[in-house]
Image 1: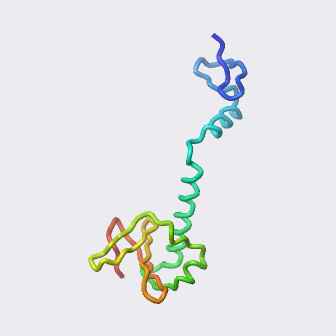
Image 2: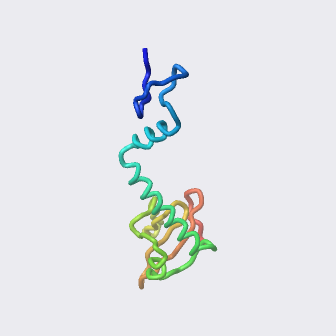
Image 3: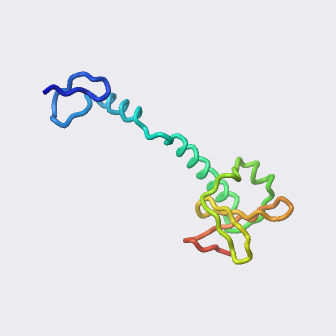
Length: 122
């Protein structure tokens, strides 16, 4: 029984379990069969990582106040975050992984750090 490359459909020679005639065909086949939505997932993760990096850079000491204008000027996206945390006072913090922010009065934000699910207050 003759076997054929899954990508270019040329006859295969060699091992009985061989599926592709070359690295190029293997890569081409695998790149063409990505899961639906994978590009969307990559784009969202890129935004979340950028938000995390911005919060980390702006908040090296673990707690700082910053204006909304300063935060947005860095390219930060307020609509992308990984989880929420509500404290006993009812304040809701938005987090990008372990770095978070709380909206305050006068268009200010309090930037904080979370460690293993617990808020760190410095």
